[in-house]
Length: 452
Image (cartoon, rainbow, N blue to C red; front, top):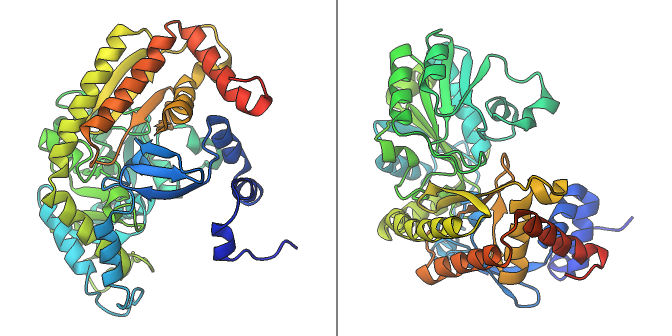
């Protein structure tokens, strides 16, 4: 037996020890993929926009925890907020917490429409699970509509309304779930007319689908159709929320007021796991507004003091520093640069997104090895990391799209550096096949001794 490793020993472990333990006891194939792309480093410190490895090398974070780090890494005010509540009872469910009601009130103030009643939990998938349950119990209907290429989480109910390959190994899933094309109003109307669906869940911008923005007017028409046919509109703002798209919430670009909204990721400021769903008084009362039903959905850790304190401070900072407006300005700057690069070089197919939620989709070479053709964006991520010290990632449902989701505190010089780096990569290799094979050679060379 290898024995228990103490916290102190774990912190002092070498890079090789860290990687080997992960490979042996957590996820071997993920460890292999991270190693291939150069992410098998020992990252030791993080502050604001930057992460540092054990050698002291500095990296610019343009991934931002997939939207969880809108305030950057280890924001000092959030750490102070956490310190200020260390003496409070953190987990004490047989009481009314001092802070969770205050956090729920803040959410009611900043969310659109008449959303008012919040359930606090720990993650986005939990928020989606709760929203689906509320839709069922408040409408008496069983079915759910969701969109192709959507991503709402990997727990059982959330997976049942996630439109991609992850479903197949776990079928049969939640019954009564039907997929419709994202942006197709006619297909949506056809399904809603049946009167079978409790809720229609969608993302204002599809994140893992490849940073897909909806057609103009789609969200408003979806809202109107849901109202007409008695189906609740569930807006998944887990990734798009809290200023990410240039407004506080993604639906605000279209003036949409959903019946239920799911929140997570940046609500916890990158410091605490924190999620929520919020609904109108009417829907909440129909679902849980009686002595028989008010305890049908609960969470041991939901609304704990530490998470609620950080959530309150996160909202305060977002509003005080107008980070939604900053996201809009910095996002337009990056979009303009990337679109110019895509016009000048024949490597990038399309740039799309809003605010600081931007995707760059690459062409797929017609003649190339599978790893270099289908995952060209992932390989470019590896080059950005290794040569330029920039952290990015591809989107889950479309691995040929690089996502740029930096913390909303990003400076214009950092935006320009990323754009300059992307231009340098495109300039060096104009031929699709040459780019893909060269990147593959460089990445594989790290493990197979070919140089690079």
